[in-house]
Length: 134
Image 1 (tube, rainbow, N blue to C red):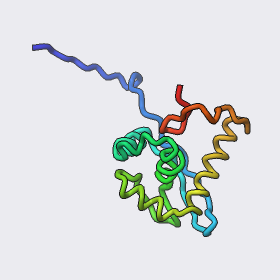
Image 2 (cartoon, helix red, strand yellow):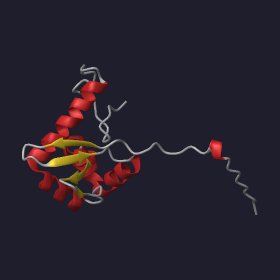
Image 3 (cartoon, rainbow, N blue to C red):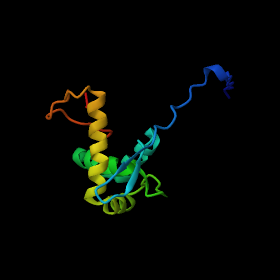
């Protein structure tokens, strides 16, 4: 039988990055939405839970991931959806007004990161995480 010895030195342990900052936005109905980018683990779980629906890039980028980014509505905490029914409920609860507020934030953040320039061609495929494939 093989013997395995593990030596851990605290300076060599790499920690996952801290969770992203929370941002609040108001939707057209006056609700305060708190937005936080899901951790990579939460995003992975959501993609697995959605199964084949996760292959639909437009759905993932326009509905699933933006809805999953909402962690609080008017002070009411919300977990990241872990199945299609929870995601559907979140999208329904947010409605067009809430989804638009989240998408406006996402688009403005992307524009700021890109210096206001569109660098991704519309024909370029998009990965479910919202980043260009390739």
